[in-house]
Image 1 (cartoon, rainbow, N blue to C red):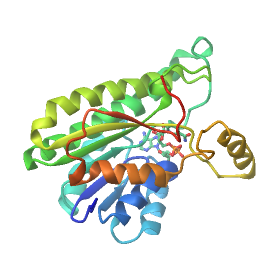
Image 2: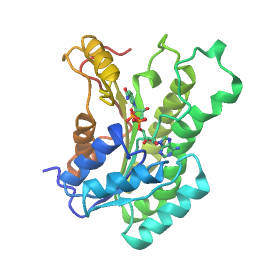
Image 3: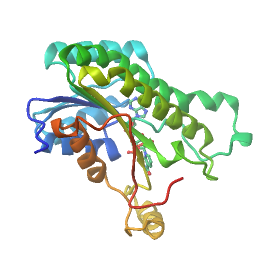
Length: 248
Ligand SMILES: NC(=O)c1ccc[n+]([C@@H]2O[C@H](COP(=O)([O-])OP(=O)(O)OC[C@H]3O[C@@H](n4cnc5c(N)ncnc54)[C@H](O)[C@@H]3O)[C@@H](O)[C@H]2O)c1
């Protein structure tokens, strides 16, 4: 059950964090995985660490031409993309800032990666999925895309919410072609980069009903399920993966 042997996945923004966890879990389930990242060294290092069935594929999801060229190259060298996980979503410029305090020059970065990034990657892969009669698109969104939060993430939320809506329409348009399209709305995720982050993480964990923050593996196993043959009847959904945090 949930065997992904013979499937090829592309995980965007997978050089670190949640995306790296998703890539590792898809590999564990038998898939071949393209590890994308904006930072080429990050994609290369992650793919090397993940082993021979992982292939680095660096590009910016926000650059449509780069996405198309990279996917063409990937298909030519390894094979068609069966599973697309749109995980890239934190632009390098991200900082918490309320909308009224934001310089309009900052707006685009959030929408470019979170909405156009998803659209660009779907555009480069969806025709071949539909033609083959099988495909899985999973987009990593956030509670910031489903509810209002007073933590300075309005433009990030705009991109995340836009992608949720796009995915719902994509799901309905491609449902008769063997393709499913679902979104995961993540809650608070663990970041253990340094001591300060670990302290913040411990404090934040108390807010989560199950008592801990999420890990890349929590998200990875959900992706494995949604990417499996067995999940063919689940499409057009936005699934909260958040340790039981209440969402509206
Ligand atoms: N960390 C959280 O608490 C949290 C909560 C909810 C949702 N999310 C979502 O989970 C996903 C992963 O978050 P994370 O915390 O692991 O992020 P992260 O910043 O740790 O890693 C994301 C990776 O994406 C890459 N990236 C950024 N822009 C890119 C682009 N244009 N093209 C390709 N790669 C790009 C970065 O270089 C980085 O390596 C994001 O979509 C984020 O919005 C995270």
